[in-house]
Amino acid sequence: MRHDPPRPPRRTRFIDIVNAGMRVARHGGFAVPPVLEKAPLMERASARAGLDDFGDPWFERPLDVLLDAVRDQARLNPAGEWSALQQLDKVLVDRLWAQQWFAAHPEILARPLPRPVVIVGPMRSGTTRIHRLLAADHRFSHLRSFETISPVPRPGFRHGEGDFRVTLAGRILKVARLANPRTLTIHPTGPLEPEEELGLLVSSFWGMKHEAQWWVPDYGRWCEAQDATPAYRQMARLLRLIGWSQQASSLRPWVLKTPQHMLDLPALLRVFPDARLIFTHRDPLAVVGSAASLAWNQTIIYSDHADARRMGEEWLRKTHLQVERMIAARAEIPADRQIDIHYEEMDRDWQATMARLYRFLGLDLAPALPAMAAYQRRAAGLKRRPHQYSLEQFGLTPGRVLEEFGDYVRRFGVVMEGQASAIG
Image (cartoon, rainbow, N blue to C red; front, top):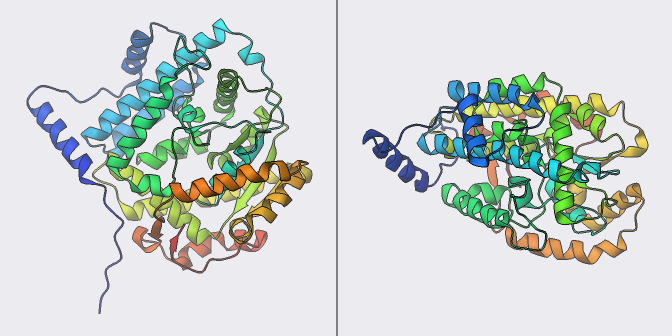
């Protein structure tokens, strides 16, 4: 008997209803498709902010390439086009506001960023758990979700007063739940939860956030061939601005993490030369399937033409490249500045694993344990339903994945979870 491969999930009806309404409005002449071109976008942002200094113009080239890929490959639906316009407009306005803050407060860019702790690993390899446990320790600084969504305070911001960025983040997360609640099952968060700095790289229109929400493989391959140092310099400027707006001590090290760093470790280390690096590892059968699922569940919100097999192939390729580049870059990093943490170690005994990590960092774990335990309890409430996925949904097999990752598994002693279908 022939068995058809399992299909990945669909989005909710919410987006279908929004798309239908937008199509009716366009047909009736009440709305027009947004213009996703660089010059009009920059003019629109300047008019809205009343400013014209976008900072380092390096960002314009990745923006050009991204917009070309969005127009040629992404096949956005009406809701996706509207969302793309809002996202691009917001990043450009934030750049203008950031330059205004830097000009008004030159002390911001003088803030040191000493010895950051950077978690480096592929999507779904346990980076979020370690990041949030470290963020629970008040000896470190960390971003919150609303700060990666909106890194730049609005003009007139004062510390200790109401911050509209928190409200905006809450609204965005509510819309995300309506569009596809699985996205927040896969990566549970809230406006004030610790979050990765991917949004700071987006300030330069750089990185995998775009690839995980739109089908833009030409853009991804272009980025892979570039030196990312200017994007990381902008990330550092925004970290200084966020630390200043938090009124956090500039002596506290930042805790950072995003899978993008696997591709860009040389650039990261040029900008943060004293970074301490935590490398995470997990069974590639789980990593590839889960990464493809994460990208699928976001892409189907913005496009009606997502192809599960193409997505599986792309995230298999992308994850393999991440691992290759991570291995190559590690050869240049002193051994005393890097440590390996395995996913199953954290599952088996997170306290013992964190104790080993804290010895590497030269810190006593004990003062942080109560806050870490409180995070563990809160995390259990955030993730009410497990993330379920399978390689087969994306046209992949365990054998195919292990052909790509066999050397990695042997090199790092990665424990195989032994399932083509997984929960995690």
